[in-house]
Length: 180
Image (cartoon, rainbow, N blue to C red; front, side):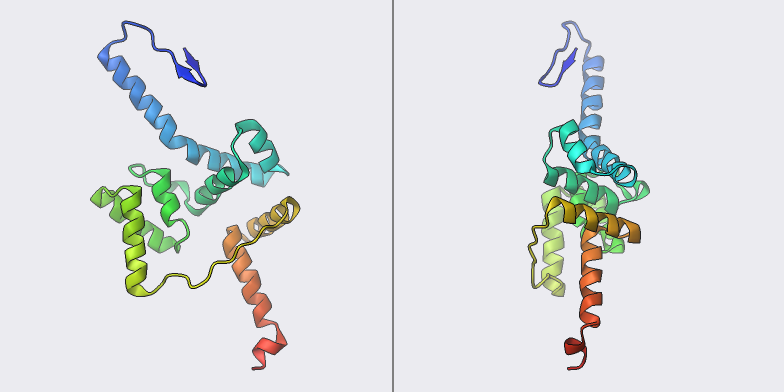
């Protein structure tokens, strides 16, 4: 019998059955972030106010759900490495597509933990000087966030890429910047 807060295992379970149950539990655990991310992406395409509904259904906070959806959006199902965790993928999700694949392949090949993958990526950024010089913090309201997310989806981009493109386009069309 299963409950949300306990797994009640009947007495007399064989070792093979116990092992099989452990494999099933691990499979569910390691798949749930992907499944929730894919569920949210479907909701984004089909239903308005998906995060409000998703928060009510899952009891997870907005940021957690948003992260799941963002990582799932960055990796098509065929790009996801079965041997690596969702957290491995999240670690490189912000990189260009070809780099993401290369880093995940290295992590799988060398058996790196998520922390080791993070360390390797940071070390490479320090060597090549590709660390970002600035970070922007924004706090859009729910209406803005939904509107921006829909606009980004319409262009086929993730939200951060879309915002960057909009800002780049705006700066290019500003006379004071382009006349200098």
